[in-house]
Length: 318
Image (cartoon, rainbow, N blue to C red; front, side, top):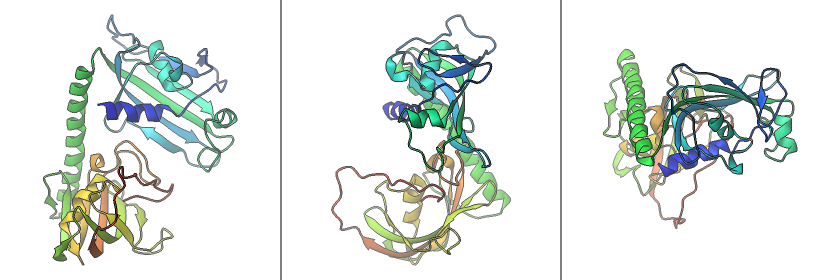
């Protein structure tokens, strides 16, 4: 649960300030917002510091002449949770709005990217470009008094979302008549060539991979190194089992040996979950064509805390 709260807090670190739109109120710190009252609020439905809130949130960048870029969303997947914070740490973020509303309420918020740049909160780049606007929406679903209650609710939500994504992948395979094998980890793997089973791409091994990643929803290729259509065709080296890639890869690659080929069908909870990544929308089920060119023992000295790779904007991920 602490990891969940930390992740939410990190998302909340995208700060928001005023942008002067009609119909919006303003907090003392300068954050503009609009509350859309919910129906059937209970008597004890306001939020106090130290309580916990379950909510959905999304925010995106709108740029003139370009398509919107979603930065984060939970509306198409599992809701998220955090502790209510009324201190200065919450100022100029959507976290500041939670104590102003009630269970069932929704809120709109927005900010000019120029404001964030001027305050040194973001650096101008392709996404956070001058003149752009960040717009967001927040829905407060439930409140809790204790962390054990949050944990129980979060586990129920996770199992529900996991089941939805798993069933979506399973239905896709049935519809396409793909005879993939379900693993104990709720992954689906189609092995067309198992490769050398004495040199499997399992934990403790380094695998050299060619891949193509496809969105299951519409069949769009979001990244590949099998050709130069995504501007790179060099093989990818993966230290398997070191959490340097998405869980679906760490779990799926071990089904292939050197020279192996096949497909991995990854439910979103074993991929990127609610985090968009380049051309991959949030909560996307993914398909990867895999070719294992080589497998060797990992003899490199391990760092004490392996670092997660930073995926490049516009490229997919592994």
